[in-house]
Image 1: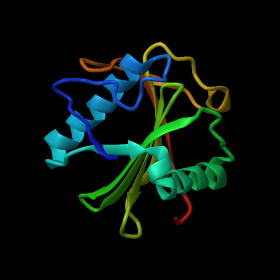
Image 2 (image 1 turned 90 degrees about the vertical axis):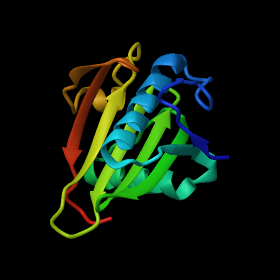
Image 3 (image 1 turned 135 degrees about the horizontal axis):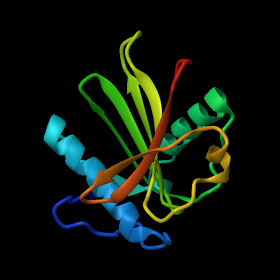
Length: 154
């Protein structure tokens, strides 16, 4: 069942099994606020099992681009188009959030972003491959993030 993320009243709905549920909910709310403010888009998530095509697309890109397989259990996904980009998000039980920004037109930006909720360790599958920069968020505390550019076509 879809859940519209409310960034004014942060909730752990759908994320309660995460050991960092509060921080992950803040991270999810931070994304919702960004899309609402920048694009007037309402950020909606659904359980990962209800939209396997979104999880499969993100998993395929990670695998084919960088041979990455995330071991954490996916809890929620989001997928939408905004301003010429196809966006996909996966929120994992560990506190990891992965987003794919995929420009619809050839030659536009395409990248995968990783964000770590406050209180979680860097996942083993990412630790040796990426350096994570820190940013502060009123909703999510300290977020650590990294990214890579997508080279293939998906």
